[in-house]
Image 1 (cartoon, helix red, strand yellow):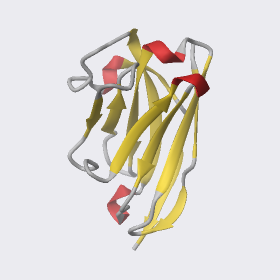
Image 2 (cartoon, rainbow, N blue to C red; image 1 turned 45 degrees about the vertical axis):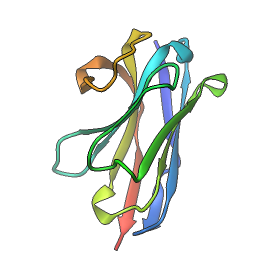
Image 3 (cartoon, rainbow, N blue to C red; image 1 turned 90 degrees about the vertical axis):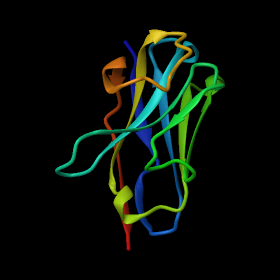
Length: 128
């Protein structure tokens, strides 16, 4: 079983930036794809980014493409989400998650059901 702990959320003005971190422990981090999700009050959970185990492949939803960047440091068991040009509609709880399957190569077709371990979330609030 893996434990995931997110950090880096907070309150930021529109146009600002934040970097979220997610530290994993308990399972071999470097062999699993990682994903980022968010959920705003009253809305469904949204899959916004993913990175393959090697870091070679990345996925972004249209809502964050060009503004957010996902990266990972396998030596530190950490995945990051750099968020730039933040908008009020980015306000949500952000969650990282780990793939159920080891060494997945194709990540663009992943859905939330492909992720088996989840962090507790970190709140991001963007003021206008």
